[in-house]
Length: 135
Image (cartoon, rainbow, N blue to C red; front, side, top):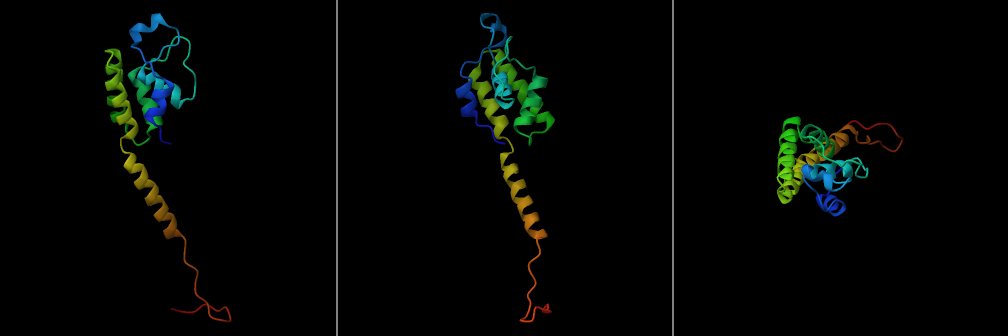
């Protein structure tokens, strides 16, 4: 499944750093916005502020083509940018996370389709009285 960053930003337009949680009960960071979107849940009481480790798992769920090292590094960058209030950079890193290796997804689907097509044997030609014709 592909997650569109524009849809996530539209549903969660106002992320806050974790240190601002005391101002509102249902706050979220950029990573928390992704977590709520992917898991199809509303922002919980106490806010949605996943740790980099938890966020890396969410990133891999959203983009299975990320390996665990990439997911962990990108989760750290998203969290760091969010915590410093640089939400634009956090959204950019999130978009990079969702789009990375998407061309592999297409290549995998095409390769799978070609393999499936190769497995299907063509029908054998027969002559009029339905006996197989030797080529």
